[in-house]
Length: 88
Image (tube, rainbow, N blue to C red):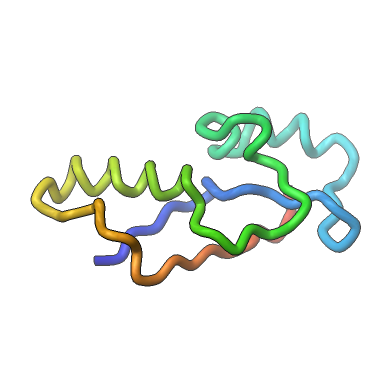
């Protein structure tokens, strides 16, 4: 079974992925992840390689609601994440 979430991952802000001035304030208003992630988890300096705890919790909760017999405690066999294009 494959689950995905859109606009819930972290955003990068560093020299290779610069965020235009004023964009961080706009993110707080329009970006879905700003409502579900803590401030310390929304902006990152490096792209994380490990499984995203927040995304795992959210997709597990979705699976329990939609497919209650699915065993979500098992480790994911594959985790993929896409960096956003920063066009805010």
